[in-house]
Image 1 (tube, helix red, strand yellow):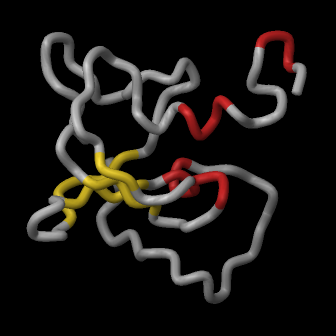
Image 2 (cartoon, rainbow, N blue to C red; image 1 turned 45 degrees about the horizontal axis):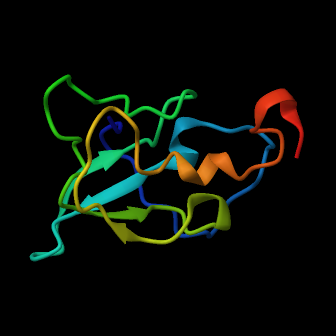
Length: 107
């Protein structure tokens, strides 16, 4: 999902251009035992589903620790995904509390 040669954000030299890119919402999937990166996730689709979900299969993040690459309040804190059923992304809750995310755009 990530481009080859992408560097981790160290917060140095960043300039906020007011534009959001897929790189703004990257999450590392870490093996909880080895603490090694096993995959990279871009978070949920606009509907809250996992973009990598395959019917009848567990989500890609099941059993792994999800760690935001950019540690901002909008990306949440690291957490372990125990079990997942269905296509709903465990990260979808991050966007559910944002103003304008509800029905009718009311906060």
